[in-house]
Image 1 (cartoon, rainbow, N blue to C red):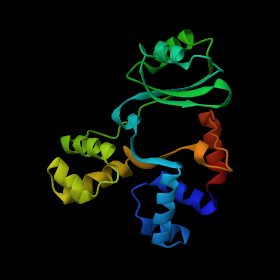
Image 2 (image 1 turned 180 degrees about the vertical axis):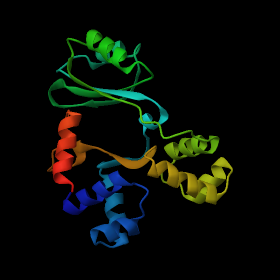
Image 3 (image 1 turned 90 degrees about the vertical axis):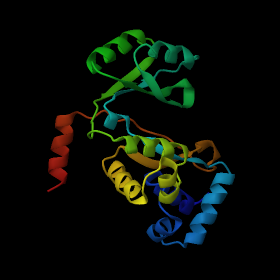
Image 4 (image 1 turned 90 degrees about the horizontal axis):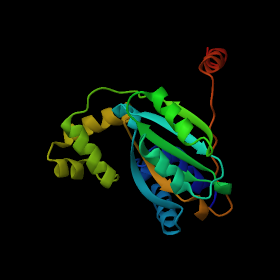
Length: 220
């Protein structure tokens, strides 16, 4: 794995429906080179699969992210979460810690308080995120999203045929869903297969007032 592979993965994380030609133009490489490298990375397990990721906040869900302390039995923690909300993300880290994403409906503060009490021995930190609805979704939108979650690389023509609508409608609604952030196309990758590299993530809790002051001082 080299820097070009990393740049290709970065481009596909931003938009995995981008064509090989588009990615190649961004990176100054030929489309054939991009295709060959993607195929190789999939064979070697670095790229696991292509994904259509739905932004739950756009559908009216509040989110709660929590980082656990080192735990021997993560399933025990997940079982305690079930009565409060739906777990949509679990990432295991080094040393027995994990990051968990939970989707909830209504009374966000109350549910944060309940989780804090239920998980007090296990949680290192917790971050709530309020829903940001983007408006009403049509039946066509829901059919489109369902199909692309199964087949994220499906063409507009294939998708239109599958959900029985026009290619023009698919193009228009797909453009709306991606622009408002309700739908994001990315890749699932396996850090363990990325030989020579260590993948890590950082969660930052920023005070809104401090962030606003920072933005004001940096951006004219």
